[in-house]
Length: 292
Picture 1: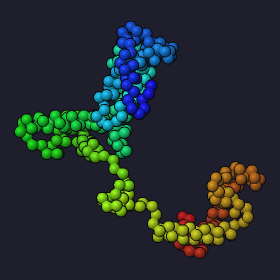
Picture 2 (picture 1 turned 120 degrees about the horizontal axis):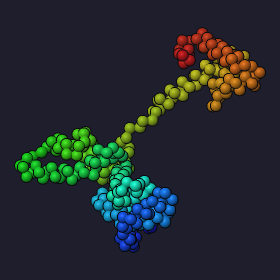
Picture 3 (picture 1 turned 120 degrees about the vertical axis):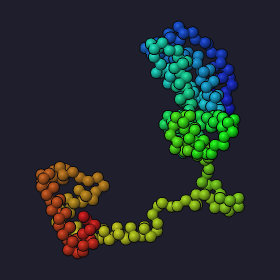
Picture 4 (picture 1 turned 60 degrees about the vertical axis):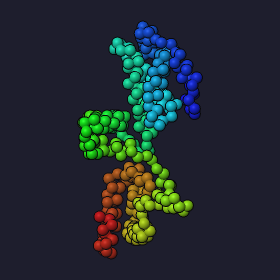
């Protein structure tokens, strides 16, 4: 199935020439796939209704998506329908599959309309595919009645007609009226015009902040080194293994290594922190604030 590049007319013609299934044959194929996962029955069912998928895909060409991609998404919806179809419900497969095919195509169109997500709720999807039609209808009716609707009134009428909140209508109009622009586009027609990306604020840390952060880190390391020097060799080792390693050791592993219980390791750790805090507090209240 060639669905890339230019439209594969032979594929479309082949789909249109596929067999037409009567209700009994369709039912047998559906049962064979559902109960026995018979792939030949699945392929026959899918091929018979590809004309439906192609016909539905063609109705969405106005949204600017390549026809091949629309057919591909329609076929995905058709396969999902075949996988979930329950022949016991007494519904024809075409009736059931139409919903899945349409949903698959609509999801694709909305995903690719803009780099910014257009919407995902049912009301937003309804607006996306119906807003322009409803707006044109309301404007024609207002013109025939000699009325002059402002933008707010029109939005309210659209919201009532489609059955969605007013703010969804206002948001969707903005999404549909604009298109994506490159941040590398120049702000003027001059050869050396500034690009739009140059006007964006840099949210990263500024030079002064980086210098201050580096100064504070060096100071903190000096204080920590001084406080660690007041501990015994065993206490320094426990503090290092418990707090200064990238992957801190557990009380149990340290206890096994040093021949002590987990509780004793915890006591030594707590005592070490008290010593360090007292040492730093004796130096300065500012130093102690770093360890609160």
